[in-house]
Image (cartoon, rainbow, N blue to C red; front, side, top):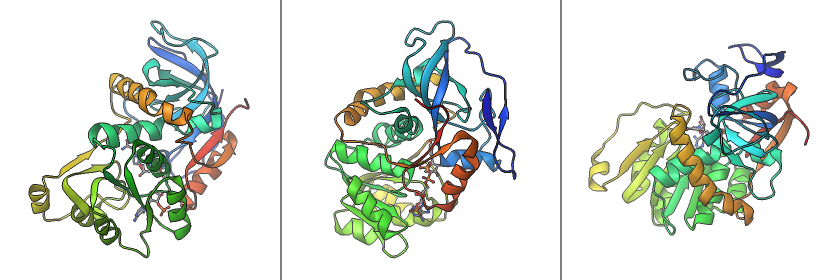
Length: 322
Ligand SMILES: NC(=O)c1ccc[n+]([C@@H]2O[C@H](COP(=O)([O-])OP(=O)(O)OC[C@H]3O[C@@H](n4cnc5c(N)ncnc54)[C@H](OP(=O)(O)O)[C@@H]3O)[C@@H](O)[C@H]2O)c1
């Protein structure tokens, strides 16, 4: 099969690789489209090695057809149209997934739209709803609102009934966040999110991928019993700060990373997503935002697009036409 090979410091290139074989509890997916995620760029730079047993090839999410099933698989059969969270290996014509990490295509989405869902939606579900316990009517702030994660989080939380604020790096991206359901997009280059969100009553939950520079302001922005959920530290993870606010406001600080969780944990998240988020897609309240689609062989250009920071929403690799 054709797959993308990644070597630190070299452009991505397409190579021939052996097609994987589904083991017990696994399915083999013929990939129609694959999602590109920031963690792929970090892995490619040698700073996010795949967990033991995961393929070396990049790619955390795909959509396509079930090609074959391993021993003990009961939920899926060849020909099913699915999308799936992967431990790696999605930038290829065929990829393996654990059966519990596979979901049916939601609503009437095509493969391109669905390929960008699993990694982002499961991450948002895990951090915002399970660990962050967001309630309807609460105020939610997401940093990086125009990112793949951000555009997903805004739509799902707005559909859930939260008041949503989002930070982004341009006025244009802020207006996009508002069109997706945010009450207010905050341009972090020209505006102060702390004063804007505080003036609106403060935040009950903040989803942060920025890290150190926002730590202090996040604590100031949170209300009593507020939650701060970390999914990345794009600008550093080390801080010196006054934790008195954690005590006085009874704050909770959480964090998680999806890739190293067990198959059983991911299956439970997928079940939550299927129950709560898939109906939002079917009813049109959440529609994945696609920035652009690149053929598999142009994976390097797709990475350059993400590196540029000019994108908004998801970048997708097209592997096989529908
Ligand atoms: N923990 C997990 O399980 C998990 C899973 C998936 C992804 N992640 C992480 O989540 C993050 C987003 O992933 P993605 O695939 O959606 O990537 P992405 O689309 O490239 O998003 C990165 C975002 O960071 C924003 N950003 C950079 N500096 C900022 C600042 N000072 N203030 C506010 N926003 C800032 C950028 O906003 P502008 O372009 O507007 O500047 C951009 O939208 C990545 O760091 C990724 O590693 C974590």
